[in-house]
Length: 404
Ligand code: NAD
Ligand code: USQ
Image (tube, rainbow, N blue to C red; front, top):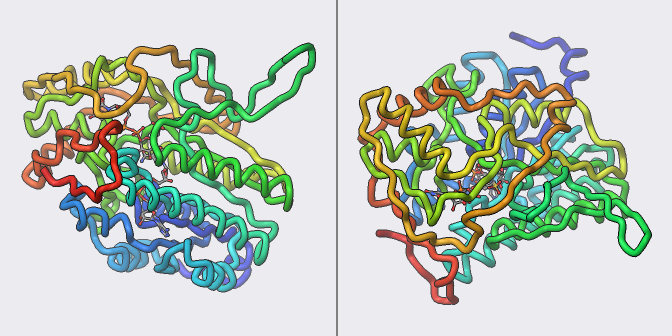
């Protein structure tokens, strides 16, 4: 589908940092399909973590080069590729100057809480990679592309689990007779989640000081694997992590059910979080780009569609598994994390809905399809990677391996 010159000139240019990862790959394809001009920045460190820790995606994934070639052959659309580390400011500057983005979507961080709690060096790597990477993006926008809108992936985990309702970014407080609207208190509970808190503060400050326009998407836990675009060809298939370091709750439970491993509920299982389908991740990011923040505005959206406790997820997967003839057991695993296991949780999430989000709520059919996906690839599952091996309390300075 060749583009004529004026079309190309009018298309919004979006730089997707972390575009080879789970959320980033799905988003890059979605935006390209929606006729945005897309470039991916990634240093492929996520693939390196797999090699270093002996892990692998449930689904076989193609190299980033083959992914992009396949996309071009199927749709005629180009995705540009900049391989490099955003902590390297010279590399990032060149990518900015050559692509001239109108929006930057920043997924490019070390995103696993357990990874950040393996040992001192991984804790330091996580905070350095995430905080300095984001600072560099802020400086690049200031220096080369002042009007560019930053859409930054934050996390619902920045708020922790307070005993009051969680607002979207800000809370209005009356104290000693005076009232102000202030950033909502942050109580993160891993070095990873804390890196997101530090990012949010740096972004808020630069919006105020330099007039940068930014949207912080405090995303909940993502589940699912297929999006319209990644389902078009096996070479476009997304990654699906099920191991105890990078796998997240519902995705892990579906893979565990498929291979006959008991579902690993940590502690009492009352831990409640916001969750969303990966098809809604791509929708939310597109909505944020299509409706940019104003210059100087630091906008915060809570990006999830439903809340579940870990016990509720285990019950849903058990029911869906039984329908498919699987015998699903659940075990209570001593909690490797330090977190509340029974708590109040009620988080607002209306701003993206106001912008037009049409959520894909968790349904039996989604769990069925995720389970069937897991069954299809069950021979690729290394069951030794399922039980948690990273402890929040036992973290120390000594370099650790996490092999079973
Ligand atoms: P992912 O690890 O699959 O993808 C992140 C990508 O960023 C990887 O491809 C990695 O190679 C790249 N990257 C990391 N550091 C980089 C650097 N310094 N320079 C260039 N590239 C770099 O993670 P994901 O699950 O796709 O998450 C994406 C973002 O969304 C993260 O910021 C994460 O914190 C956030 N998020 C994810 C979830 C979830 O459930 N997966 C939930 C909430 C928020
Ligand atoms: N949990 C279990 N059993 C498991 C795995 C997890 O009980 O086998 C529990 C955890 O203890 C925790 C909850 O489920 O209470 C969620 O854990 P998770 O591993 O699914 O998610 P989390 O560590 O919070 O991190 C993931 C992503 C991260 C993102 C975050 C969004 O890896 O990038 O920021 O979800 S949120 O949880 O809203 O902060």
